[in-house]
Image 1 (cartoon, one colour):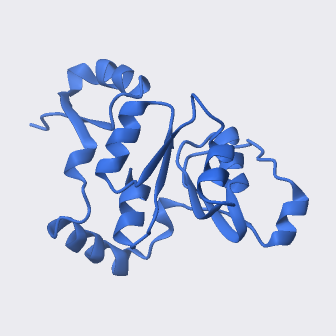
Image 2 (cartoon, one colour; image 1 turned 90 degrees about the horizontal axis):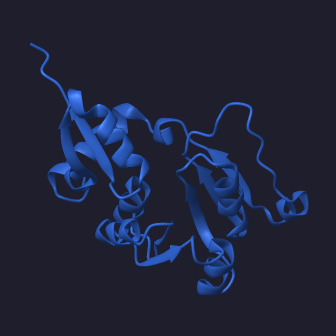
Length: 170
């Protein structure tokens, strides 16, 4: 959702969300997605290549899974970039067709948004205060620390965006 909201703030004309839950695709539209692809019913790469007549300029992988990293790369147009923001497990190998590199496609990683904190954080605060960065809507529920297991289980279902655990520090 953060990548979608960021793309909208940056002025992206078309933002395609991919998920296996229709509820998440609807939620993505609230953050700026113009289109959605349900990867549980279609091959997301084929669908996006068809929707865009050849691929996307940028793709962002947010799950940290081998398959989705490879899909993010495969849906690019020549000379464009896939950014892996998901936490890929250490030691996991991602496979790409080496011949495709001849088209100047790029695969990059990102740590903590690859931002310059001193410059970007004040901008993010301004975006939030001006209603552009929609952080509050990403919180599905607040739960006390005693409910952490239930909140985590709910997150695993894929039906919520984020559950925030609260605790009394007294």
